[in-house]
Length: 77
Image 1 (tube, rainbow, N blue to C red):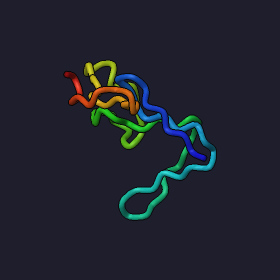
Image 2 (cartoon, helix red, strand yellow):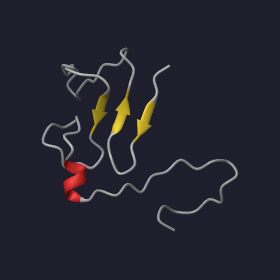
Image 3 (cartoon, rainbow, N blue to C red):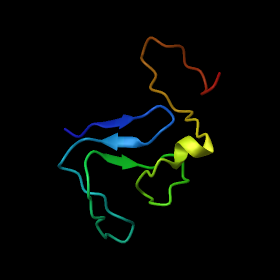
């Protein structure tokens, strides 16, 4: 099973060795290191990979997992 962790105000992190990242043309990206960190802020100069820019631009993620016992509220409410 592949697990994707969301870092608070940071990238999507994939620890699995059994993951390929493929672009819209079907071309596979070369993966130089693990874990894989995928940009979530949109400001990375290494897209689709994270380069740490999220911390310099002040990215604040709106998404959070909501458990079944939580009241359903919009992000930031």
